[in-house]
Amino acid sequence: MRTSIATVSLSGTLTEKLTAAARAGFDGVEIFENDLIGSPLTPEEIRDRAADLGLTIDLYQPMRDIEAVPEAEFARNLRRAAHKFRLMRRLGADTVLVCSSVSPHAVDDDALAAGQLRRLAALAQESGVRVAYEALAWGRHVSTYDHAWRIVEAADHPALGVCLDSFHILARGSDPTGIEAIPGDRIFFLQLADAPLMALDVLQWSRHYRCFPGQGDLDVAGLVRAAVRAGYDGPLSLEVFNDVFRQAEAGRTAVDAQRSLALLQESAGLTAPPAPVVPTGFAFAEIATADTARITPLLSALGFSRTARHSGKPVDLWEQGEARILLNTDTSGHKPDLSLTAVGLETPAPEAASARAESLLAPVLPRRRAPEDAPLDAVAAPDGTEFFFCATGRRGHADWTGDFAPAPRAPTPQAPAGIGVTRIDHVALTQPWHQFDEAVLFHRSVLGLHPHASVDLADPYGLLRSRAASNAEGTVRIALGVGASPTDDPARPQHIALATDDLVAAVRGARAAGARLLPVPANYYDDLAACHTFAPGELETYRELGILYDRDEKGEFRHCYTLTTGRLFFELVERTGGYDGYGARNAPVRLAAQRA
Image 1 (cartoon, one colour):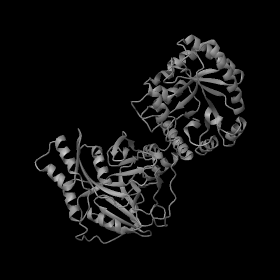
Image 2: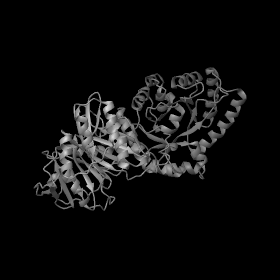
Image 3: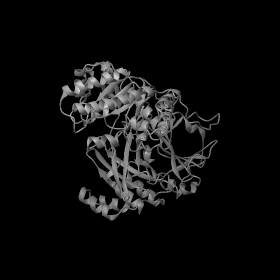
């Protein structure tokens, strides 16, 4: 289906918004009235600019407080509407959005509303314009789509139909299946937005917290399916009011918006892009640093051994169990400070994963590769982290480990043979403030991971937001974090969590080898004793070693942290039972200790 986006969803001038929408591949736009009024361009120049960019102007919006008012007030409304209709002819738009009234002068009289909307539609028809009537979720007397349709049906004018807005419908908890009873040719427009579930006044919720489909918790795909079954064949148009999007770079936001519609159409069964290829595990985590002396003592203390070096690049492979760390000293494409720059994902079908990414506007990154190197595709996440699609040791697929030549693995007192690390449990990536929702959608749509509920974490200097995404088995977990405001430090630490089956033994081994672990305040263990019952000596062991503890109805979680080096620290974790979280209740203790 054709795609469209409201100019209110993007930042910048109207010209910048049109350019961003066109470059992202949209077919059309909704022109928000404020954008037109604030533009130095004439309506004709805006029309020509859109046409030059290959964009249609699908909707002009909004007209407010029109219907169910005293006759004198309605006469003034018709004069206002006549001006708008003349302007729309100059603009080249043929559909106008009329919102259900919130005016204190409006009365609860459906017959009056229908009669006045019929007169409005007759005036619109004279100018070649259609009127799409939308029920605002906070409308004074009309606040549901079925009520709006009853009024439109009673008005019975060919230039009058309904506009269905997913936020207004789903935020009120209305059942969208009733849309199928509306004739498709009377659904003049479909506006789409998602939102996180929030206990908030619906007007404030709508004005500040909408997001693109797939980034929130509403069943937008189900609503689209109902509209299509009713016979709707117009554009799928995004109308998203979001404080962050209005401050972000318009081009990136428009690409994110187009990606959301691609995922939405797939979810609604309207398109069949390359299927998601869900990763099954971590192949490696890559750390970039100009000075390996800053990190190699820590890796050794954590039980890793340097096992190989890339045949043509300054990259070393460190291993323990199935956990692999790459140290890359070529920092030309990255910040020079020590940081996590790439993640290898074990992928059932790397070629299909690449095709999926490109279909969702995440093109494969160009790479410098020698002829003998294994072909290894990577895409960039919104924060710049590169994700490689790997098939380690699998027959019939290129194996990236073949690019590495073996290195001696003789243990030394400073480099133990291992402390029991089995694999990478999860990675935590700090996101730029403007790109958190974009990152969630990327990990869901491009990588095929399932996003979990968002949680707030208390830092001494403000709340942090975190949202994890994982595969069903929990063998791939990625925690996305964002600071409290746009001014929050963009270089907040990232971390790599390493799994072990015996955390106490692992911590003792790491400490004996010289690892410096994050100290935990004694107050934490006093509180822990009040919350849980432990076996004799268990809590004392945790206190001695700086181990944090959590449990839920499924199992237990034990974890501890190293001190931060550059932008990076490590976490050692032990999961028992079916524990599926990340120890969120302990995050404020960790954040405070790291600040200290």
